[in-house]
Every structure is written in structure tokens, then in C-alpha cells.
Amino acid sequence: MATNPYGWITKTLTTIQRAGWQRSVTPLQGRPGAVTYRNGQPLVNFASNDYLGLAGDERVIQTAIAATQALGTGATGSRLLSGHRDLHRQLERAIAQWKQTEDAIVFSSGYLANLGTVSTLVGNRDLILADQYNHASLKSGTRLSGATVQIYSHNDMAALRGYLQERDRYRRCLILSDSVFSMDGDLCPLAEILDLAAQFDSMVLVDEAHATGVLGATGAGCVEHWGCTGRPLVQVGTLSKALGSLGGYVAGSAELIELLRNRASSWIYTTGLPPANTAAALRAIAIIQEEPERRARLWLNILRIKQALQEKIPSETATFPEGLMPSDSPILCLPVRDVQTVIHLGHQLQQAGILVSAVRPPTVPTSRLRLSIMATHTPEQGDRLIEALGTQL
Ligand SMILES: *Cc1c(COP(=O)(O)O)cnc(C)c1O
Image 1 (cartoon, rainbow, N blue to C red):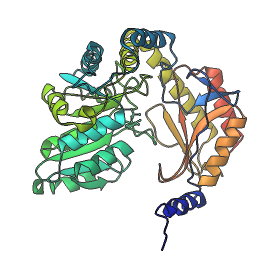
Image 2: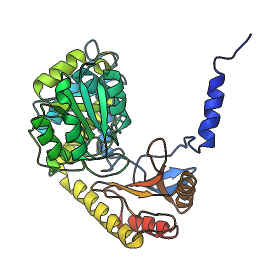
Image 3: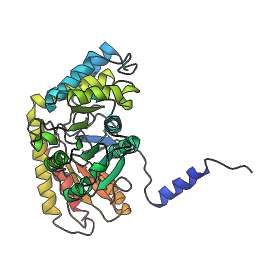
């Protein structure tokens, strides 16, 4: 009997379509910025992770071009073989200096940094305690590690403490949390997590993807923002959000970084970061340190838009039953009743010249509009967002 071993794919796609979970891509045109173009239509961009507007910054672009001219388009091999350049070490030193850690290591993406770090730190005799809203890359790293995992409810320190009572049944324990939750915009209570970790002999890995360049007096992230600089922890982050490039990093003790160089498969068995991305990230860090006014402008925009949203969408409306979700970051979320509504709203706003993310399951448990604010948004662009949302209540 002839069977089709791929027949299940058709069935799965039908299920995805029926649930309204089907994803598709539409291209944007031009350089990244506060205004982007889709099918030639200008859209004010509230969907980008380029919080400081550095992905389209002329200086960063020229630095990437110069690095490509000098060193070529690809790293050509693993960092351990032919792929290591002085530029990589310069970037790692700059990250370590910014984060005030002994050392740092760059990976080819933030996703790979989390995979490699979690699976290096723990194995099948160990315990992972993870926030329910952590990024998918931490969840993949957890699976790869083979450790036992307990998921605690979002930012619930009593639940975390409860699971820590079982810690002694395992060899090592690792607590995992986003610092800025990527689909919610709120922060983890890092100081409390670190206190619990110290009490129960546990390691902490915090994912600073959306905090780096955004939070803290020098933009070093949530660790700096919460006054936790120098405490024992593993900081992971990305070069692809506020730094406008591509790549991931881990910052921590010299021994941690040395261990990752020896054990993290997602660093060892993959090609090093290309010169253009490495140089761009290095330049972006320098600009962030030299121009604190960029971050100041970002926060001014966040506070202004947040206040306007709270005034315009006071509590429950038909479209936004819960108002604005709590946030201390450039990520502002408005929960929406269902998948159909959020898709419809995304289209309506686009017609009004506004680009936002319509986020839905399985990425998040409940559908929501996700707005990300940039330093380069003008007050008028903020007003346009508020006005467009105001017609959809
Ligand atoms: C974006 C993101 C990552 C992945 O970073 P990439 O460099 O894009 O692979 C990891 N963790 C969190 C919390 C993120 O938001």
C-alpha cells in the first residue's frame, strides 16, 4: 500500500489556518527607521526593535561597509578555526567594559547564545526554574540541556521560592528569566531573584535582549537599572535590537566565558559573526555611550505615549477590554479580545499609516497589539498613533 509520509503536513497546515494562527511575511522597503514603506506606502513604524534608530544610522552603516571592504563578507569558519578576528575581541571587550563584567563572548545570534549557554550550564542531573513568559530561545535551551524544568508563574517570587525548596534533590540549579519580557514589556524583579538564588545556591541567567541600550544609567541594561551590577549572574543579550546589528552575547566572569568557549556547541560549531555585523555593533555601543541623549529621547517618547494611551484608553473599551498592560520599557501592549480582532486592527492601523505588531497565539497566550517606541519618533508621529488608536475603541 502506497502511503504519503508527508501527508501530515497538509493536515497540520489546515489546522493552523482554521485556528487563525497562520503566519505570512510582507516585505518592508528602505532603510530601517521611524518611517518605513510597505507596497510604497509610508508607515510610521511602531513594530521595530531598533529602539535607538541605530540600524539605519549613517555612521554605523559606513563602519559596516568599511569592515566588509577590509575583511570580507563572511567570517569563513568557526571562531576556533579560521573565523576569529581582532574585531571580535574588541567587541567582546567593549561589551564586558559596558556591562562591568570580567569578560564577554559574542555568538552569531541571541537565540544561539541562549541555546549554548543554558545547555552548557546545566544537564540532566540539574534543575531549571523558568518564568512562564520567557523567550522561546530560553525554552529551546532548556530542552537541549536535558535538565528537569519547573515553570513558575510570571514574576511570582513566592512560586519561585516554593520550587527552590526542592533544589537539594539536584546537582545544580539555574534560574532563567527575561529582564524585559519581550511580548509584555514589564521587568523581572532581578534583585529578589538574585537574593533567592544566593539563599538556595542557584545560578541566574537573565536575558537582556530588550534592555541593552535602553535601561540603566549608561544603557547597560536591567542589571544596571536594578543596581545589580557586579552581582554573580550570567547576562545574555542580543546585538540585533537597540544595537541595530546581528549577533548575541554573554557577559559574566572570565571563567564562565572560558567555559563557554570550550563547551557551548552553538558557538563552537557555527561560523563566527561576519565583520560587518561585528563592526556595526561595536560602533553602535560607542554611539550609545557617547550620546546618552538618544536614550533620554527614547524615554521621553515612551512616557509621553504611555500617558496619552492611558488617557485615551482609560479602562475597558469594546476593542481593548483591559487597557494598557503594565510596562517599564519601550514595549507597550494592548490586549485584544481575539485573533480576528487583532488582525483586523493591524490592517485598520496600516490604512491609517501606522505599523504595529498584531501578536497572537502561539507566540503569546492572548492576542494583543504590541507597540514599540523609538528614540527617533517625533511627537507628531506619537500623536498620529494615539489618534489612529482612538478611532478603534
Ligand atoms: C530577540 C530575542 C532573542 C533572540 O535574539 P536574536 O539575536 O534575534 O536571535 C532572545 N531573547 C529575547 C528575550 C529576545 O527578545
